[in-house]
Image (tube, rainbow, N blue to C red; front, side, top):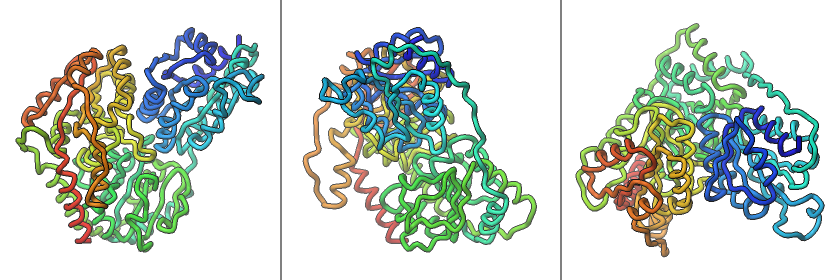
Length: 550
């Protein structure tokens, strides 16, 4: 076989199911080899960035890497935003790019650039194949690194001349390993510290929705009643209906959940990534007692200096805590403030449940109806923009990985291509992407991909004819904003031109019916909602009052 065949065989052995991308001349050998694969499906996309976002969502939902593919030069650079997004959101991904012949890499040559060097800052590992015999080791290492905590993107480059060479090696058999666990002595120390606290609170991060950590966390909270505040990406680590769910934290301003953090005499962090919500926002005085539990040791930061670090498998740590709880009595915790926080937030979530406005619709009402229509295992994907802030605060989950929000690199254009991948992974679930009119149009060309695949997805566009989040932030800080407005297409004609079904909703009372209809339709549907972003300033005022109380 030739090297390109061997690369495909190695990817098959690793269990890779999908590769999303846009081929080019320099990876033609690989594409022809891939076309012969009975195990890997290639999904042709309309832009490399869309391919990367599709691979990211596949990785988030399955825990296994998919591939995103581009050719050399502009094809590779078009991938990089989606790759960086996945890497910072801790998602396993394989990035596959072509390259010119090795005989011309040392000099000025058409479309030649240092692709590996470009990907190094946004991947866990980037490598160029220089000999066919190294392919099995490179692929085995790449997949292992991409899955290993904390997961991320790995880049493999295959030059066009290497792809044609004879290969005599065979694919390596994947062998999994068990994650390490904290020692019993360290777990005992952390457990005693927790038992001595009177007002502990759990801050759950992205790591809690990987593996079986969510199930173990729920068991621990059922035993103790300790409240859980989640970051945006940890939504669903505990059920929104559980009495210990204290909703989310992550807005730049103080919110109800910050009252529980301020009241706590110990913060137990689980799978916490400070890239989502920096500790200076909840431990500015550096006086909090912190127990850190994660797959890796804590990032060094003046405002995040844990007394004890439980480094290892989160599920094993929480399971041991639950076992220790059965062996001793402990005085009840004082969780009064935590219950007040939950009650206050629940009241806000339902405040506009019966809202009946026309012309434009409040964000709170939109998300109340979305939650009413979506099932417990259905999936909402949020793009990045002002709507993301509302989704983070007002849309909550019953199960992990049912609300996907990019919150590390935070790239716009994520939701539409991500929804396409979500429908491939879970064809029987309702898949709803929510985007602003700015973010949606950044990857609007993937509407054709969705139509071609007959993806059963709905994209809801919040229309405000502006980059609303930037306007919101400029108004808050400067009391005015720069030129941020733009025009939009005729949405229903746009949907029709791509073969989508289209809906425009301007009446609050009609939203639930229209959304349910769109979700029941076969194939992709577009729902456009003019949004009342006057609520942005009102939320800023409300959060300001909470901050003053604190």
